Amino acid sequence: MGRYIIRGGRAISGTLSVQGAKNSALPIMAACILSTGKSVLDNVPRLTDVQVMAEIMQMAGAKVAWTGNSTLSIDCTDVDNGDVPEHLMRRMRSSFIVVGPLLGRLGRVRVTYPGGCAIGTRAIDLHLMGLSKLGARITPTNSGYIEFQAEKLRGTQIDLDIPSVGATENIMMAAVTAQGTTVISNPAREPEIVDLQCFLNKLGAKVSGAGSDVIVIEGVESLGAARHSIIPDRIAAGTLLVAAAVTGGDVTLTDVVPGHLSVVIAKLREMGAEIETQANSIRIVSRGKLQSVNKIVTAPYPGFPTDMQPQFMAALATARGVSVLTEKIFDGRFKHIDELRRMGANISVDNRTAIIRGVETLYGTNVVATDLRAGAALVIAALGAQGVTVVEGVSHIDRGYVALEQQLLTLGADITRREGEWA
Ligand code: EPZ
Image 1 (cartoon, protein in one colour):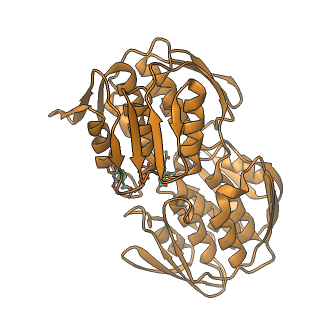
Image 2 (cartoon, rainbow, N blue to C red):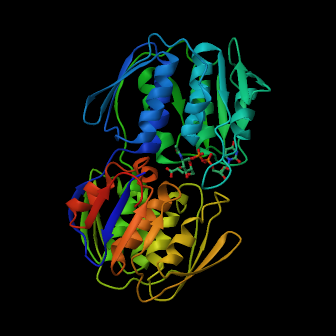
């Protein structure tokens, strides 16, 4: 496990291009399984989760290769294996989104449960409900695997009682070559869902409504190949904005879609940061102390993103006043609080609500990243803290950020990365 050594108290400033979206690249890679051709994806972030998805696809028979720093070539002509081994399923919680495309392509899939993770249970009941309604026969085996079989999936009406991102993606991908029309009501509305629709339609699918509260998929016989550029990562962008706000910096992000970050930008303005946006760029200027916010409640898009909750908690820890933050999406996404307390944060928790009483400053110490966004939060806290912080467990951060230390060094932060066992 590697670690970051961060000396806080330095404002970050400069201009940085935002990486491609992890949570768009993963389902779009999986969607290539439905195609009998060779697709090319641009603006793909070099992340460990992307590497895991590539390994799962190669296991299925796909040829996946980097042909540029952020360009993936994916040839699914010879995809013929629907068995995904447990060690791969367990390496990434969102591995389960390969089930829909594999089932649509091969008619038989065998996977394990994706398992829980540091942010809470990762249920799959909505995935199973949707695939079952499309006609899949689902058989749990006694070895922890689940088998899916379907000669031909059939379009139907599917109502999601939770707008699950992964379930929406799985059902969309399974439905694109089903017989007839599928209507998904109450789907996830994230920009990554719209990007997936765009890619599927480039392959020859007939999907409409992504981003709204009803998605309609008309089944087609087969799908070709396409070239597609992944949308910018709104969470990676939001993370850098919060880091600039905390350190009193002046940062311009390019190759970003401000409209994907409306609520995040509004909250940072409420906290006292000055933000101006252009078509594909965001500039943030923060002068000194931030203000607390009355409340933040995480919600499905376009509400406040749960993936930005830990980062805002780190910023609010030294804001002037008391903030109330409620996590409504995941039941275990407060593990960063204990680590922030080690740095001097004053945070109390009542079930899913955290009361954050701003303190004058946090102090550098040794902390441990428990998951991807918790790790990002600790980096933000360290950048604003007095003294030196060691953030252990950067492999979690590598899952979602492309060389975060390089990004921050470009902006003038005092951060180094050390590999090997913790001394
Ligand atoms: C996606 O996870 C993202 N991951 C997550 O980002 C993100 O936090 C999450 O959506 C919510 O926005 C990817 O896109 C790869 P969900 P996903 O299904 O699809 C419950 C990050 O940091 N639920 O929308 O797993 C579930 O328990 C990651 O980049 C069911 O009850 O999230 C949760 O409470 C973390 N049954 C809620 O829905 C189901 O069948 C939202 O989960 C599925 C989900």
